[in-house]
Image (cartoon, rainbow, N blue to C red; front, top):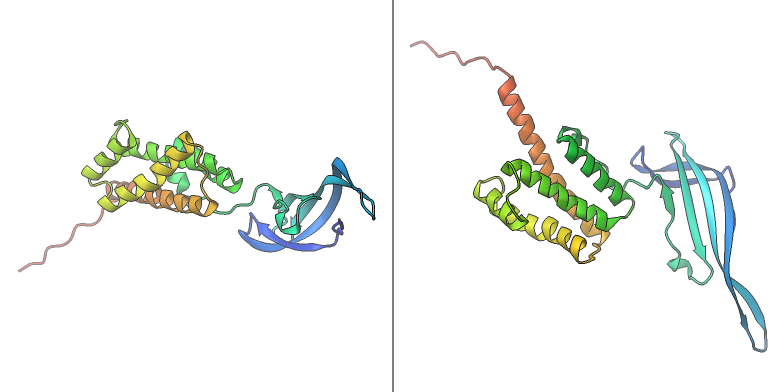
Length: 231
């Protein structure tokens, strides 16, 4: 396994720039773990070993100077296309946390941050469960308390014109159904499907934030009255 030279530059996704940028590989080292041996007994007797190799690297962004730690794993019995993907610390941000999150109630801010961290770390079940919990918080805030199960809450939201008929169907068959399956039936969504769940959650909560801002603006700003024209 060839080692990275200290002067080597690679392009990786940068959490600071939110894009692929050039990073200097400052240092890399290799560790090998031997897990077994095997021998072929034939005309050309061969003895070899089964091992894992790990390359640990420290990288620094050329522009933002953000430091990243990377672990690459290689197993002797895998083909090249079967090798595990690189692991990064901090985990790569696949979907940035929206800046309007700070306008949500504090408990929702905290949970939404945890959902995104789970998403970045590929903890898909945890992220899906968190999205379901955030939707439950939203329902309780809108309805003024706990109103039973999700079906009852969705029906009340629909009856009170807080969500449309189409939105009720979408929320029930995405956030609720996926969340229940991850919580109770060991379901692990595909990453692309989880990203859609996140987009649906953002759509819902951003509308909630806009509503909060609109009410605050309506109640706090005194606009000049319109002058009536004289006849």
